[in-house]
Length: 143
Image: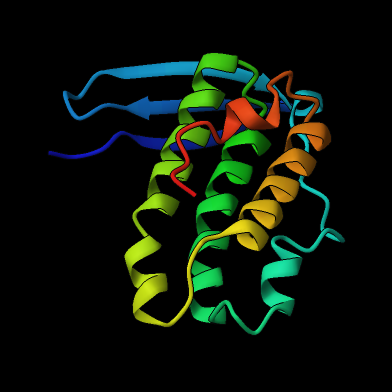
Protein backbone atom coordinates (compact mmCIF):
# COMPACT_ATOMS: atom_id res chain seq x y z
CA UNK A 1 0.00 0.00 0.00
CA UNK A 2 1.48 3.34 -1.03
CA UNK A 3 1.48 6.29 1.30
CA UNK A 4 0.30 9.73 0.16
CA UNK A 5 2.78 11.81 -1.79
CA UNK A 6 3.04 15.58 -1.58
CA UNK A 7 4.33 17.94 -4.22
CA UNK A 8 4.68 21.66 -3.78
CA UNK A 9 4.74 24.16 -6.63
CA UNK A 10 5.46 27.84 -6.30
CA UNK A 11 3.46 30.21 -8.51
CA UNK A 12 3.16 33.98 -8.16
CA UNK A 13 4.18 34.06 -4.48
CA UNK A 14 1.90 31.19 -3.46
CA UNK A 15 2.61 27.55 -2.71
CA UNK A 16 0.20 24.94 -3.97
CA UNK A 17 0.41 21.55 -2.33
CA UNK A 18 -0.82 18.55 -4.27
CA UNK A 19 -1.42 15.38 -2.30
CA UNK A 20 -1.90 12.14 -4.17
CA UNK A 21 -3.39 9.44 -1.98
CA UNK A 22 -2.85 5.71 -2.29
CA UNK A 23 -6.15 5.64 -4.20
CA UNK A 24 -4.99 8.20 -6.74
CA UNK A 25 -7.15 10.98 -5.32
CA UNK A 26 -5.57 14.40 -5.74
CA UNK A 27 -6.24 17.16 -3.27
CA UNK A 28 -4.89 20.66 -3.62
CA UNK A 29 -4.32 23.26 -0.97
CA UNK A 30 -3.02 26.78 -1.25
CA UNK A 31 -0.54 28.26 1.18
CA UNK A 32 0.60 31.82 0.77
CA UNK A 33 4.30 32.35 1.17
CA UNK A 34 3.78 34.57 4.22
CA UNK A 35 1.93 31.70 5.98
CA UNK A 36 5.00 29.50 5.74
CA UNK A 37 7.71 29.75 8.38
CA UNK A 38 11.14 28.15 8.42
CA UNK A 39 12.30 26.54 11.64
CA UNK A 40 14.96 28.24 13.77
CA UNK A 41 18.30 27.19 12.26
CA UNK A 42 20.08 28.19 15.49
CA UNK A 43 18.13 25.78 17.69
CA UNK A 44 19.84 22.46 18.44
CA UNK A 45 17.31 19.64 18.43
CA UNK A 46 17.65 17.15 21.32
CA UNK A 47 20.74 18.94 22.58
CA UNK A 48 20.73 17.28 26.02
CA UNK A 49 20.53 13.79 24.50
CA UNK A 50 23.49 14.51 22.22
CA UNK A 51 25.53 15.84 25.14
CA UNK A 52 24.82 12.78 27.31
CA UNK A 53 27.04 9.82 26.41
CA UNK A 54 24.35 7.46 27.71
CA UNK A 55 22.44 7.95 24.47
CA UNK A 56 24.18 6.62 21.34
CA UNK A 57 24.38 9.41 18.75
CA UNK A 58 23.15 7.14 15.96
CA UNK A 59 19.94 6.50 17.92
CA UNK A 60 19.50 10.16 18.80
CA UNK A 61 19.91 10.82 15.05
CA UNK A 62 16.91 8.53 14.46
CA UNK A 63 14.81 10.45 16.97
CA UNK A 64 15.99 13.71 15.41
CA UNK A 65 14.92 12.54 11.93
CA UNK A 66 11.42 11.86 13.28
CA UNK A 67 11.30 15.31 14.86
CA UNK A 68 12.55 16.91 11.64
CA UNK A 69 9.74 15.23 9.72
CA UNK A 70 7.24 17.09 11.93
CA UNK A 71 9.18 20.33 11.45
CA UNK A 72 9.11 19.96 7.65
CA UNK A 73 5.36 19.36 7.86
CA UNK A 74 4.87 22.53 9.91
CA UNK A 75 7.09 24.54 7.56
CA UNK A 76 4.48 24.01 4.85
CA UNK A 77 2.22 26.34 6.82
CA UNK A 78 -0.20 23.67 8.03
CA UNK A 79 -2.52 25.10 10.70
CA UNK A 80 -5.08 22.31 11.12
CA UNK A 81 -4.61 21.22 14.75
CA UNK A 82 -6.00 17.75 14.09
CA UNK A 83 -3.51 17.12 11.29
CA UNK A 84 -0.69 18.53 13.39
CA UNK A 85 -1.61 16.30 16.34
CA UNK A 86 -1.70 13.28 14.01
CA UNK A 87 1.83 14.13 12.89
CA UNK A 88 3.05 14.40 16.49
CA UNK A 89 1.28 11.13 17.33
CA UNK A 90 3.04 9.37 14.43
CA UNK A 91 6.38 10.79 15.58
CA UNK A 92 5.82 9.69 19.17
CA UNK A 93 4.74 6.18 18.20
CA UNK A 94 7.84 5.86 16.01
CA UNK A 95 10.02 6.97 18.94
CA UNK A 96 8.28 4.33 21.10
CA UNK A 97 9.32 1.76 18.50
CA UNK A 98 12.98 2.69 19.06
CA UNK A 99 12.93 1.65 22.73
CA UNK A 100 14.16 -1.88 22.05
CA UNK A 101 17.02 -0.59 19.93
CA UNK A 102 18.02 1.77 22.74
CA UNK A 103 18.01 -1.15 25.18
CA UNK A 104 20.12 -3.27 22.82
CA UNK A 105 22.71 -0.48 23.01
CA UNK A 106 22.75 -0.27 26.82
CA UNK A 107 20.53 2.79 26.88
CA UNK A 108 16.86 3.58 27.24
CA UNK A 109 14.41 6.36 26.63
CA UNK A 110 14.07 7.53 30.23
CA UNK A 111 13.80 10.74 32.21
CA UNK A 112 16.63 12.68 30.54
CA UNK A 113 15.48 11.61 27.07
CA UNK A 114 11.84 12.37 27.88
CA UNK A 115 12.84 15.84 29.09
CA UNK A 116 15.00 16.52 26.03
CA UNK A 117 12.31 15.37 23.60
CA UNK A 118 9.68 17.32 25.52
CA UNK A 119 11.77 20.51 25.50
CA UNK A 120 12.38 20.15 21.78
CA UNK A 121 8.68 19.58 21.04
CA UNK A 122 7.73 22.51 23.27
CA UNK A 123 10.15 24.78 21.39
CA UNK A 124 8.72 23.63 18.04
CA UNK A 125 5.14 24.27 19.18
CA UNK A 126 6.05 27.77 20.37
CA UNK A 127 8.16 28.57 17.28
CA UNK A 128 5.28 27.75 14.95
CA UNK A 129 2.68 29.23 17.35
CA UNK A 130 0.76 25.95 17.56
CA UNK A 131 -1.91 25.91 20.25
CA UNK A 132 -1.28 22.34 21.45
CA UNK A 133 0.08 21.58 24.91
CA UNK A 134 3.39 19.71 24.83
CA UNK A 135 1.93 16.90 26.98
CA UNK A 136 -0.88 16.47 24.46
CA UNK A 137 1.56 16.59 21.54
CA UNK A 138 3.52 13.62 22.92
CA UNK A 139 0.62 11.89 24.70
CA UNK A 140 1.23 8.61 22.83
CA UNK A 141 4.62 8.18 24.50
CA UNK A 142 5.57 5.07 26.44
CA UNK A 143 8.64 6.73 27.95
